[in-house]
Length: 264
Ligand code: 9J3
Ligand code: ZN
Image (cartoon, rainbow, N blue to C red; front, side, top):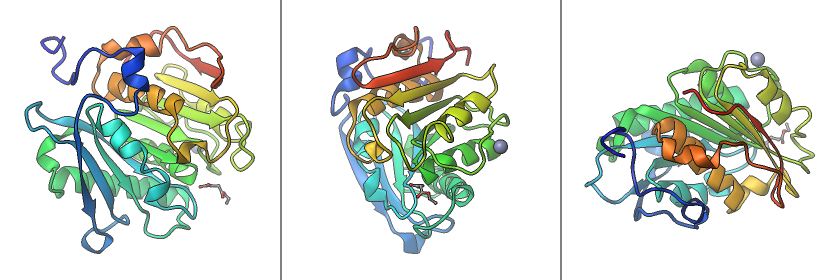
């Protein structure tokens, strides 16, 4: 109920509403040229068109090694239509490593909240990060250096740093059972296991999936990402039902680990 939670946005969710290709908000978008920003490579901001619902939480999303914004762009309208401002970015070079991608995600959030044309629509205290592969590794780096971030979702993340006990940000790690580039045994699983045990954390292993599954529209990635962002960026406990009790293995879920109930 909005009277209890000033950050709640949109109608009460259902399984169909979080699985749908689009949520309840009409979405607009604006392009940010790399020539006009510093610290990252520009991108596209997707945002709810309405100005009648107050400010929204926001998330910046980085692509992986050698990849462009286009490789993660499906998440822009998918998440924004649920009531977030979403900034899908390009990196300074496509070869940037995870630590650099982490700094670039933070530069993008700073641009979004302080300089962008939609800054008035963003609640600068409710921010999150996502990314694919080295961009997912970057989302862990960003959360490590900025503990005020409210949610992190690394997607088939890759990083040489295997341990993340420093994080204070609720983190959902999404791995793929068939990933041979960032195998879950040496990336997603140790990343998840090394998070503090008292932190709100989860590990979703996609079934029948590869390193590149996060590069196209995927309902399982979308529904749990929406739920995690709503639960921790918006403090919206209406979404707790999709996260706790822990999802059971299914045609699309190889494994799911996490703490329940959530504490944050
Ligand atoms: O961003 C990624 O896809 C990282 C996987 C990779 O190619 O690492 C090799 C150095
Ligand atoms: Zn570490």
